[in-house]
Length: 610
Image 1 (cartoon, rainbow, N blue to C red):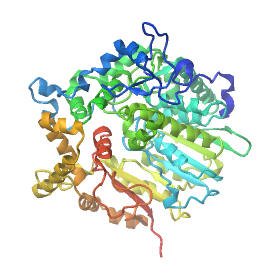
Image 2: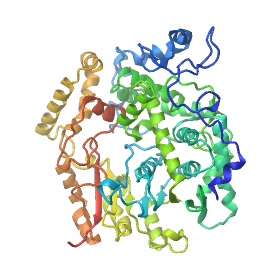
Image 3: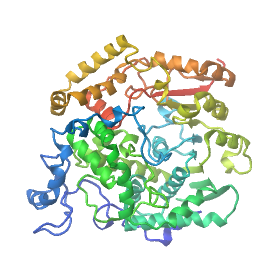
Image 4: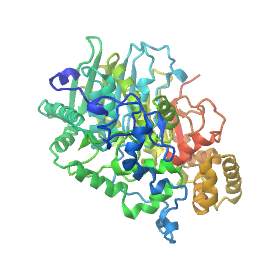
């Protein structure tokens, strides 16, 4: 299939702004007509609301006109400095105190459509092969891909003048995940939309927003029909699609298993309204039975961030807080199933999958208030997608999409011969293999035995990357607690010292008025001030990692060259055990993004004789 096939449909007006135009900067928050002013204001927003700090207006006149609408959000209960969680107001025990587990999952089972770790560049050439390798071909595998954020960041990390070919294999056990990834990559590598910014902006909503404009919905339906057209191509488990995107020298090819087509067949025939879809979404994101869990999470946030978080839970949109939403009238059919059911859990949030510190810095250049995290995220992801789309028009790229169990997929790759594109004929060898945190479910030994044999033996920098979020619950000394009073006390003292140096108005108010909640927050922060590397090494020994590595002729890297061993610690600071983040960055990473800082990353390479 040629990516240029989209010439038969109208591709304009895919943006989020007035008349389908793109949002290149923050607009005035007067998004509706007022008593004397007609329609949404098209001017830049420069004057911030001093109360909520989430929106900006072009003038005092627009701000006065919009007050009757804005005051409901500006004076939101959760935005009050005196806000208390429901269990405190109602003088009862919090629901999570009665649960057998500290956190109970809620929402659609098994649909992890968004990432929960900040996106990373898994090539990281500057620390490995070198940025001068512009003619070198790379073969990458995201074996449990989740969304496309890591792949996009990795491609965007290649040299601007890259002349080689990058082959990318994306696999996920969930067919909804794989189908979403396929259609997004098809869109972003299509050469014909004249405005890359417009295409990237629409892709932000396809990825992370519950509602679409009519033009965005039409374009999504178009691509579903284009992919479905290949169901008659072959009943074979693999279908190959390919075509030029820029000229005869640049080619983007696609290969995916036939079963993915069945997802699009179900989604394209679905009949449900935006109203019904949002109602189902809110039954998950704002479930009354989950108020205590929600308030516990919100209690870690500053008042404007609480309001922003709840706004996203209410409308499901990744947009600047004050942006007009009236044109978003259609449900996003790749975030709901064929019955109009929301596919994610109540804990899922797009903020978790990106570097918010950089996103907020980028948002500032577009006049976005730093309190408006989803607004900053909108521009950050749009920039990432736009850069990827520009590179897709120049680079030689090839994609394989699969939805198989990870170990079965590894065996499939080892056995495959004639089904592969010419550049990746079996045996498949990869320069990078990302296995996400699947070691938490099947163990690191199973990961390595399945995938280590697929590392490229001709590349001394080839590596397999894995990480664990749940190891700490399997290792008694991994987390400071009652069983380790001395360790816990030392870490808690560091938390107190760290908090005492936070002179922000929000922190002072929280310490004075929310003692119970503050104790909970400190308990969540304690692991960040504890060196858990010895405990992690003990855990890996219990998992027989040294023996497994020896049997496979691989070794664990002591010095990482792709991903830091622990979030919050720079990659180049090899000997650093505990973060040295400033208060703002630490708050963003832990309170907003929900990172526990107990996550540990691993890198493996082929053991080579010296």
